[in-house]
Image (cartoon, rainbow, N blue to C red; front, side):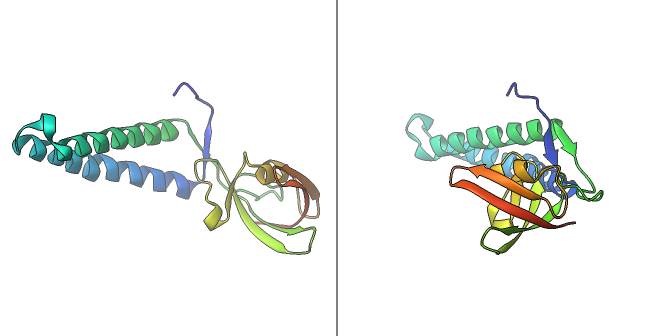
Amino acid sequence: MADSKPVYLTVEGKTRLEERLHQLLTVRRPEVADRIQQAKADGDISESGEYEDAKNEQAWLEGDIRALEHTLRHAQVVENGGANGIVSIGSLVTVKDGDGAEERYTLVGSAEANSRQRKISNESPVGKALLGHKSGDVVTVHSPAGKMEFTILNIE
């Protein structure tokens, strides 16, 4: 993971990732190690499906741990999004689309993006278009679905 660009996180997002890493290190890692030990104790590991499964789980777990550690190592915490009336990471933005429908998005770094929670990445087409704008601005979004326009109604 040679990529060392900053990973933008809200305070809540950083806390959530730290808690997840702690859980993986203190709960999941020992559980997987116990599974491997138990599989070894049960006999011939060369033919043990349980042993292979546990080793595969360990590999995935270690990959998740490395990814979380990398993200946290390069984390840049962003606070007070939108406090100056300009859309920034951490802002809660209300927009109106060309059809008059209103949407609310929280602009976050890519590590926290979650479409179900209406958290969009600053690197997404909509996120990029909104960044740096203020209430009343009309922004054009160029996305794979085509060109869309949004009017920024409110920034919190």
